[in-house]
Image (cartoon, rainbow, N blue to C red; front, side, top):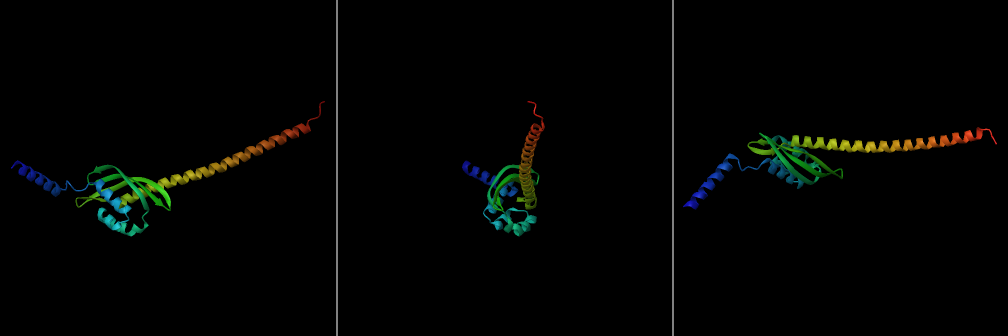
Length: 178
């Protein structure tokens, strides 16, 4: 009789938890499912995990999505009906390996966590553009530095030649005192 009571109590707790949504997947699980589907190139399945307002964006841009090599998820922060999951992707963009860190942004929609693709993509692009601009600035700085070093080396060489020529002229112009 005791075992039967335990099973009934356990079943009642399970049904209560599922009815109240306590066992629904959390933001980290939904983010993982979304990125797994994206990695597989299964954008139809990925639409199951995005907000209704993001579905059109995903469908329109699925062909333009970068080739993801890997997606790593980290810390989760929940604030009411919004959540973020720290995300790091490794992708090939224009055949170049690229690593970008941003937040996958989720919100509750009809009691379920869904990826807000507009906000997530905005964060991803902001981080990518900032990173790329920083790399470009570094490359420009290196190129300008090389040019400046070349100019400085040429200036020093010219200065040394000028000083040698001035010394030679002084020796030639000096009367012989012997």
